Length: 161
Image (tube, rainbow, N blue to C red):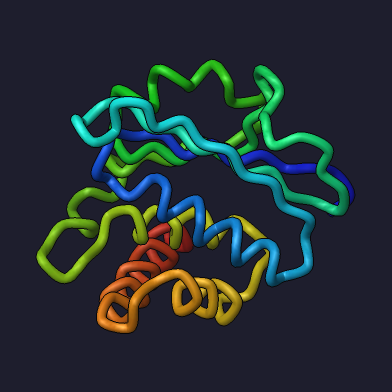
């Protein structure tokens, strides 16, 4: 990869947007990319809009994604995804939890981690690097369920591609 790529995570407070972007940032950094991340979470504790931008590549100059340059829009909530759809570049990817909701539900599945699995299936970063990022960012008691959820998302996206 010879250019900066852009991931925009969107959703509502409590959906794990910030944790998902943190894990993605760690995985991409650990794989050797330069990474910058920014977030907006104003009323997130009250179910308000939350966004997080992750930019990665051989060289990244700013944490902010230029208008219309989103390569991957990862939406945990359909309305929030639609709100930012126009920011996806031509040829970019729009991933929404609604696409895989049946597989992403259940007490032992974390929806934000399912979405990270879907994203990871489209990036050239080994699964082991992603799982290491989970281990680095999560308390031990949450690791197993997140590893399983990540695998569900990755498998789902693999079937779709």
